[in-house]
Image (cartoon, rainbow, N blue to C red; front, side):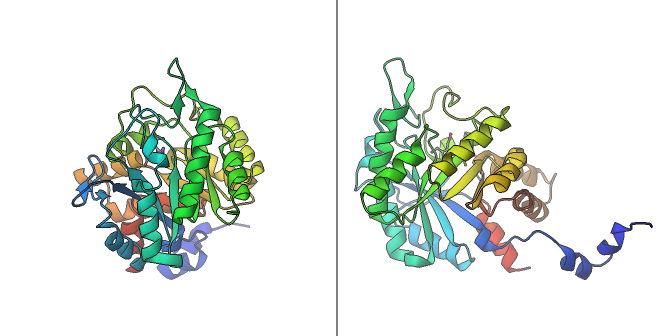
Length: 323
Ligand code: PBG
């Protein structure tokens, strides 16, 4: 018998009929940067079309996102003042808390609001945790700060806490403190397999980071898929409600593995540098914008991600709406 797979590709209708992978606005999460004391939205260097929002501009931005059919946003706060302890991260009237409160009072249950629980946006040294005397990032002392942030942000109204700091046992620590405070319905998004990646560079502009050096002592080594599997398993064991792989495009194998072993939804984060890389190619005309936005996001879905956190979310959702 001759197998003739081309027969299924002959017409657009046939191709639509047999297409295995779907991509809808509900599969997308939009990251948003909210900067304290900003008068109007400010373009982020290296990320064309992406702006730091002010508290004043946030509601309109959320309206656009919701109109496009997107159901979730990831909020990052950028404080005016940074210090070694990242004090603004645990100031209940700090910028992140205010953004979460505003987003929830504006959108209510129509939008799932994720708050980033990490210190790097708030520390003057730019690390995701507190530093010890030799400049090392302290694991357990940092967990106590995450716990405090978690409770405050849950009170502010966050539906989901995004644990992006890559400290050991961060999911268990936050799970415990939520339980102890009768906040068991606040969900935990674990950045389980987060790699020490060069693709985060434009994000550092977005959050005005002054990081010297790198995060290799806490983020994962991209050579190690076995370690990624362990990190995912540990977060599942500690009670994560979502597991995330980050970045996305160079890590499709890890996304695929996560989808295989996870009993909770899998997310992937297509990060700032992936956005920048594609946009640079669009600007030169080397690559076609719509085609490549679709192809890359479909690929991440095909690998097994239920939800993709991506700076293309708004544009892509609008594009999907017109097709
Ligand atoms: C840490 C955090 C980072 C990103 C998301 N959360 C920065 C880092 O780990 O260096 C990067 C996201 C992106 O590049 O779009 N809070």
